[in-house]
Length: 424
Image 1 (spheres, one colour):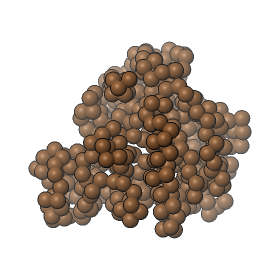
Image 2 (spheres, one colour):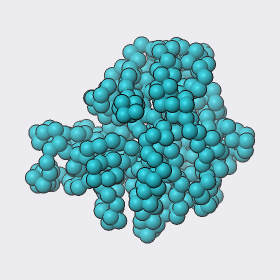
Image 3 (cartoon, rainbow, N blue to C red):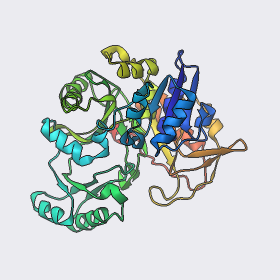
């Protein structure tokens, strides 16, 4: 079968890599892909901001399965258009993707269906913000309502900071249209958890849990990013907690969306805070996370194609995934200046040496390739991912691989999974 992956980041490279391992797959395309993905798939030009561009591409190559990587095509309704044309596509419809494309929709949905989440207020103006403020204690989390590539969340420690940041968001200066409405939210304390399930519109099957590291700097300092690294290990959640999360969060979300005539098929990514009051939903993503996908798929031993088709065809079961007991760690190498302004075109060296290491896969996120050499082409450049029997061994292996790679201005966090190792 022919498979098309839409997107150009590290998540899409991981999807291409895993899909290629299926005995049923004869050809993998990626649109538009990147320098590293081109080594594992045929990359085709496409504008992921244009439904017409993606439909034209699919009509040309007629894939047997399409997997949507990033959030924007989902928000634009690509799944709806592909489905109308009889194309097998993995992902939620435009209506279902509102769980990610609108923070206010998600918060009100959680409230309607009594799913645990932090107290919040939705604000369309500075007057709304100032009216809501007295009902909260600092610190507060300020969220842009729309899609902001992981950069629309700001933790504000003082009222002055919140007021000025909200004014920047609402004016459009900070995030454009994504910030035209904002959500104020109680700042929850605890450990964050990325809990993903695959749904067929009625049933769900959980993936192994992961933990992302959002901030740019060690010790969770600096601004939020799209994600600077992640790890997946059996120690993150036990089987009892996994079942609780399925029973009290994932299934109620899928049932609630069906009740609201927005059947949810695809990956449901529940961003959770494990608080003293119990797990609470921070946000939803309606697709595989980035960089969580990289360590999660490193642990997947069963056929990914089978799971994606089960979602599309309404036959998800508990046995759809089989996982390695190993731990896996992804360290993101980014361009100097990210998540603000950064330069591209820096030559990357050491990729071959790192890729030869046992249990290591270097996923390309923002790279280009010319004359046999790789160059930086984005903010997040590489996701250096390693697998080993234990978490500490996986961390050591990942950083050994990172040490073999270099490019001008390379930045990476040196504490991925450090908090988890301190608890061991």
